[in-house]
Amino acid sequence: MATGLYSKEIQIEKEKLQAFVQNKEEWAELIPGYLHHEFPNEQDMIWVFQGDFGLIQKAVKVELKYKESTTNQVMFDLIGLSDPINGDGFFEIRQEQGDACQLVGNLTMKASGFLAGMMNPILEKFVPQLVEQLVQKMAIKASQ
Image (cartoon, rainbow, N blue to C red; front, side, top):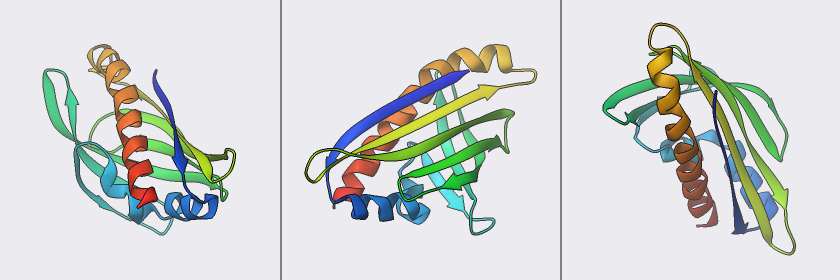
């Protein structure tokens, strides 16, 4: 199972960062390789992005099904719609000293089915990079 965990300290008011993370429309376009997104209902989101999996580049469609949400944490399951890739993840806000907050992103993905033997080693490299790039972009956009 491929896992990515990344945190970034941001000089921002906690309430501003909380509002940003809770508003999925604010950060939906920040995923690396973003093509488009849609909201099948009020809670969930479908991301379509161009995945660069080493020798293979392809459009990947995943649904983020929200499990629970607090003002400081958003947790979700990932369901592969275009490929048998599933997982889960979260974004969490931790208060640091003063006006500093820590934005933490975590994502776990695992391929199944016929191509699992080839895809899981690729995901091991892809997922940590994806999480790092997404959290960095979220930190920049939230601070603007």
